[in-house]
Image 1 (cartoon, rainbow, N blue to C red):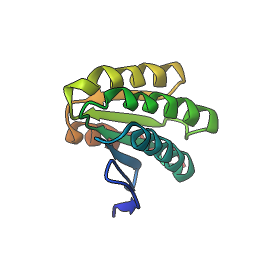
Image 2 (image 1 turned 90 degrees about the vertical axis):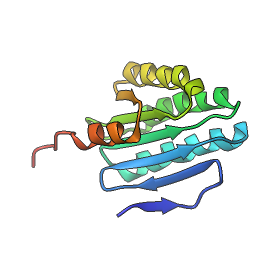
Image 3 (image 1 turned 180 degrees about the vertical axis):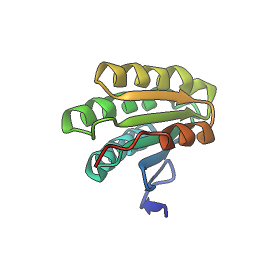
Length: 133
C-alpha cells in the first residue's frame, strides 16, 4: 500500500513496498531543490532497495540538477547494497538532466537507469534480485 508524505504542489514523495518515489516539478527552483533533498532523506531513512524519480519541467529544468546532488548525498549517507534508481523524464527538457544523474549515480556505485515510462521503470525496480536470507 502506498504511503504518501505531505508535500508541496511541485513535490510529491511516497513509499511503496520496495521503493521511495517522488514526482518532482514543475515549480520554482527552490521548491524543486527542496523536493530532491527531502526525497534523498526519505530514501536513506527507508532502507528500501530502490527509488523512482518522475520529473516534469516547465522552464525549470536546470533546478532538476539538484537530483545529481541528492545522489551524491545519498552515496555518502549510505543506501542498501544493490540499491537501484529509476528515473522518468516526462518532459524532453529533462532527458539530458536525468542522464547526468545516471552518470553521477554510476560514479558513486549506484545502479541507475532512465526510462521512457513509469511502467518500464516499475518493472525494472520490481525485477531486483532479493538478497539471501
